[in-house]
Image (cartoon, rainbow, N blue to C red):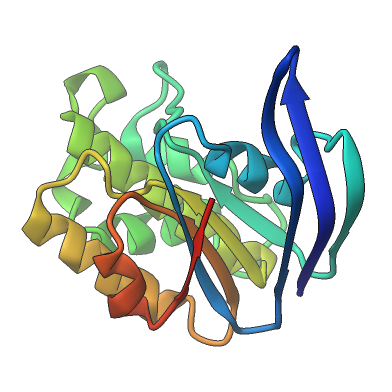
Length: 194
């Protein structure tokens, strides 16, 4: 569950969010849309606890998994190692097995041993998505926050990944930052314009 009341955030003299309020119940899906620089990413970071608001009240009641706009892959680790690196070592299923499962789900099983510099931008983004799914899976995160996770993908691949996200997020609270309002329709999400 998310409850934001009168959130404000400025960077120097530039106000990004002013008295912004939002609530989401458990299992609700929300798409944040708006022009570049309007505060969507900042809001996602505030919800995740990665940035502090200048004012207002924030209540988040669930464990969180975040997917950033950039893939943020470790350049010295292979695709599969990048996924396994964020997983706790003490799980019933070994980290490498979970990594394989989620890499396969995003269609990149054959790229498991490739290093990030040999992946296309779209492939790197799908590795990051697999890492996000694996982390949320193993930690039981019920609040999923994604910042433009399909921006480097062609339409067909983006649609496939959106379907995967739709299934994975069932019963969880989802907040998706996107420029494409059709994503909201496909996810049955409420659109919030910032």
